[in-house]
Length: 612
Picture 1 (cartoon, rainbow, N blue to C red):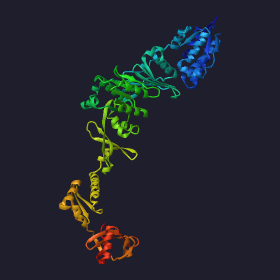
Picture 2: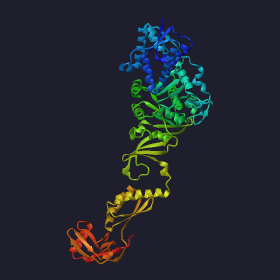
Picture 3: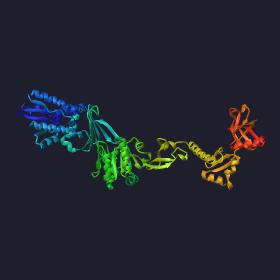
Picture 4: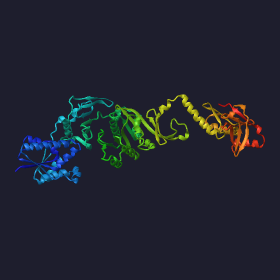
């Protein structure tokens, strides 16, 4: 009677059966049973462009050919998996069906999956577990040396490595032999083999064509079709673990990190040393008896043992954030803040009172702050971020502190333009380098150094305009047509109508003194006497509420001055119909009308104006 063996998907993919046929370990005394569910699973993987699917189908072809050549019985057994089986495949439904076939046929299950082997043995099914033989020569650590920061293994390309330190590294070929698909598959087999499972801290990310794993202290990213057009394995390791003291920080910065800062951004370009500095801060807080947690995916920060590292669920960090509020950490390190939800979550946790340290990619220190604009309200930014540390080449290049105030933004002059302004100051000099504020519906970021570069003349002109505008506003209450002339930074001259002067001076000079005190300048008040030219002949006409002074057409468009005796009433331009129009209800109109009614119109004189 022939010995029956049932093959599961894992043993087919690993290729052990065709080798055993070649080595005569399986001969014509055996009957090979292939579950239809295993074939369908391999076909499904191949349709999704997964390498395992193609390898498994190719192995099935070999098994069929070699079985025929060696007179070994082979049959396909079982029904196609239904929709429910497919949905529950990840929970072991298809593996369970394969075990049932082995039990029904009184056969021995051959598997490379240790869990499948345990499940079969536990239910009394005969099972043989065949371990994958993985050579240590495919250990990815072999590609590293003491100077390697990262290793980049790409199908069809010579292996590459970045060597040096953050900010000072070179990309070098570490072999002249191009990597083929088989070699890269062997490296992946080594990483995922049973013997190495104890070395993998966790599979951090997994989806079609991509894995992110932690192998010892290496962060390894594996991509293959359909994510990438070819297999690529990238392994990154921390170069050095530093303490905060090794950065030789200024004592004032250490005090701020220890006592004041609770919303910190650590910014920099990729590979600049951001995560290394974040790890140093974590250790500093632990040494100062602070409870520290991390939010990271993948979890690759080099932190003390008593720092618990939280990863993300499939839908993000939201659920983990709820857990953080329950465990009540003093500080949480968020590595890395990228997506819109990350910015919102960072702000939400910070506003609950948890100290937050965010690691963020940015080309400049200001860029890290700009990335929060639009994600949270502008006025909330200083409450969420109080300190920005920019790392370049493993060293601190710039430190900003943020402050919220209400003021007139730099470059504006009107006091009624005051609004909430976010000031971004250099930590050491305390000089404000940028201002952020809302203008209409836009958020404006102004570099103050551009404003400071303006010439003294431009600045003085702006001051003069501001002073003149404010003075006109005050004096205009007495004489709307007052003229203002800036004599010096603390003295002005105003020219007003003669009859207004007593009201501006006030009794005993009280009014002008109050005005001078309000404006902070010395004021000379003089009567405004228009420069007059030749007298202009005119006649008078009335129409409803208007009085018209009719002149010759040669004066059309010219400016004229109307006097009542020595009093200048008005300066105006002759219209297109050769007449000067006055409203009877106006102060000037009433005076002219009363003069006409009293038969004293000869006291009205009209002169050409010589004013520029």
